[in-house]
Amino acid sequence: MGDHASSISKNKQDTPERRLADYLKCLPHGEGVKIADRNVLPYESTSEFTNTLAAFENTKLTE
Image 1 (cartoon, helix red, strand yellow):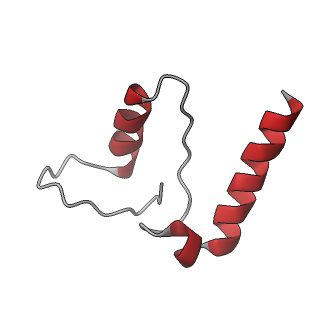
Image 2: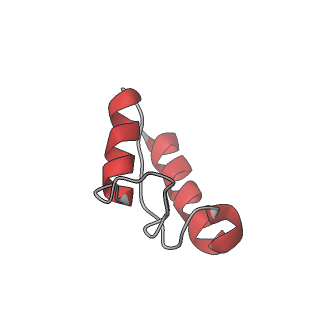
């Protein structure tokens, strides 16, 4: 999730941290991280997005 992700929510307390926590509550084996930028991360922060995915894959391969 982008660390500056916007939301359509009218709830002013709705932050990227809170949304990520809400998603992870619904995904018992889910994992999530915040990446710099907003909403469409593969396009807005391509290198950070791919580096984060690569690190995730490398972690899963070594577990």
